[in-house]
Image 1 (cartoon, one colour):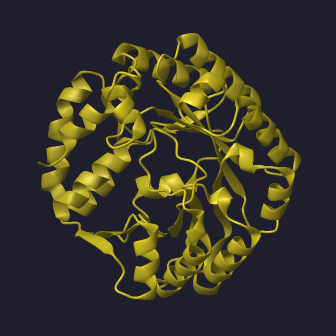
Image 2 (cartoon, rainbow, N blue to C red; image 1 turned 90 degrees about the horizontal axis):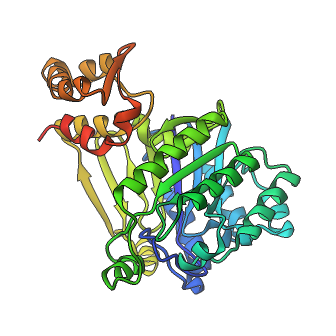
Length: 375
């Protein structure tokens, strides 16, 4: 089984916190779509014939594409790849793009999952983040999607915003739970170097909330969503039963995936490959090979480290028999030895052959995982 990720780099405007590659230069859209289809076609052998279980249109803002764009992309995908019968096909979208006409257009294609970037239900915070929708627009778009037949919707929520209060975060959670999406991705705001938000913090135009407040927000997130029937299957991801994201899970399960589009990453088990983060260079490279790409071979110890990071961050945890089978007795015992302190501290536990984070360990996950890595 494998997955395909398509990076659609266009945005009407950029959010101040985002460090994913995107551009507001929509003049490149038509050329980009043709280049994307060309890359999809000529990289058809990358997945070695594995059937595709998920396709994810990410960005950027994929809801900037037109009916004609989706038509040629899906035609290319269906021509060169074998899909499993119950494939998951996700499109990311901004709430203000999802009017009735656009949703009706999307229904003509095999999308069966929608991921909407809500972030917060407070207009003050949305404006500061440079989001282009209001809270009411997000709520209306969600209900419109339901009315038009969407049965698998994921909503993104962000916490730890500058000056955010506990009351605001509680209200965001209550509103989210009342909508009852099948999936919720909840991320703490990160100040990424090179973003406008990073500069605003440097200039003291925004102030990062203290760590103890972040911990309290995260704890409240877990408690409220758990009470509402959501399962935390990964540190930042929650779903109703059997509604986890196949796309996200592919990364944590170590499945192979093909990434097409500028800045998109690919993984085949032994190496990683990623495209240039520039739409003009990307288009030029597709039409006049070689493409501008970077490659990284994954040696034995790097693969071990990646297994630790991708597995331990899930609530299922690291399956120890597979670790021993794949990496040998030495690294297996190394992992157990390095986990001893965290187990004694109550941050890790071994249950049914899985090494996994405890509730207390979730709050210290980066440090706990770091201790298990081979250095």
